[in-house]
Length: 125
Image 1 (cartoon, rainbow, N blue to C red):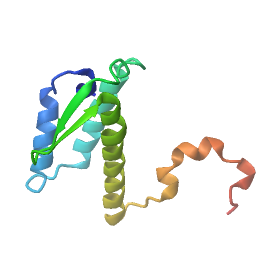
Image 2: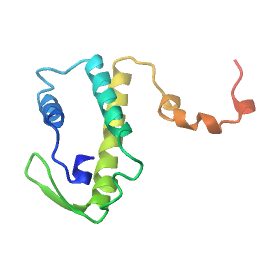
Image 3: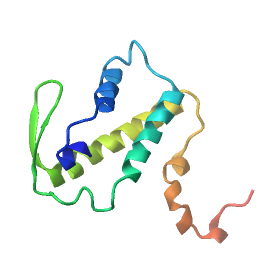
Image 4: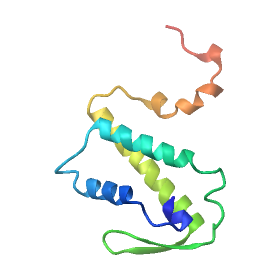
């Protein structure tokens, strides 16, 4: 979001990146994860619906920790980098939770589909 708006990352982002890089030493807790989710939702709730649309053609140089640099437009960055990263991390978290014995299944991953479900098609029993 900061990159798309041409803003510097806030200190909290650098702190989060450092925590991720040190996860082997301090993996964090589920409470930490919930706090991060709450912070992110609050940040996103503060945006207008079109807040990230203004500069779709703006060039973004996205540098990885290993020194590789991707030259993208803001639209390409949002579509081709961030969406893939989001889904990768969702699925990784899902897999970790499953490995740890949390009873999750496809229905939990596609709960957004429930409004489209025909009530008479729900299996009985």
